Length: 254
Image (tube, rainbow, N blue to C red; front, side, top):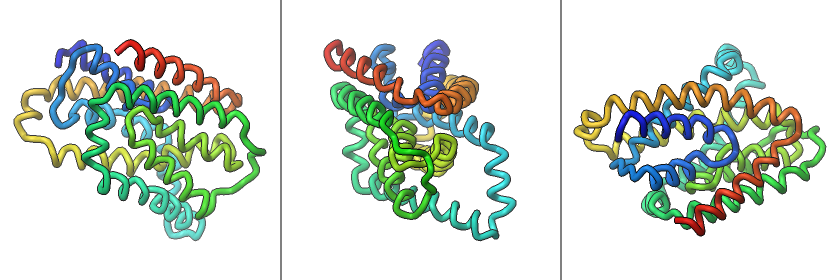
């Protein structure tokens, strides 16, 4: 992988991880366009590392506050909801790992998944009044939507935020919970992929991978702040048109 490709992949990951348009789906499409073949999905790991750091940076105050008050009942309950909502993803990965990996090689499945993401985003525009609080049942539903988003082409942020909005949770709280959930999800994905990779792969690709991580961090920070502003305007569902358009183009073009 060239330095140019590393920059492009990092930029695409940073933008698409937080905007509800599926980072995994766009990475598959761009790898197809650029003819990149990365063993063990190391490109995705590096790109996700950058976006993980951007989440930690943007939500550093909330994370620090949660850690500082971890012994209080309110913080314990919130941490419990994060753990509960993470369990479906863990189960889904271990039960369907081989199937999920095979989808990264299927441009058709990615295209269909993008169209599906667009439909869910559009439906989220018909959300209820934002006066509901997070609870166990809502947390579990949101967690299951995150598990489903492991499929490339299904947007993790799109699914979790859309479901939160449809459940009547405020846009601000929906975004916060979505990206708090992303921390263990992305970290776990990185660890699992690294365990499957061979050591020589790191030596061959170390510099491009570092560049990918850096670019995804910078672009991810910008995209995350942009998404928060979009959510506050009530125009989150606008992204549905883009997902459906890209899904249709990639389905019939590739």
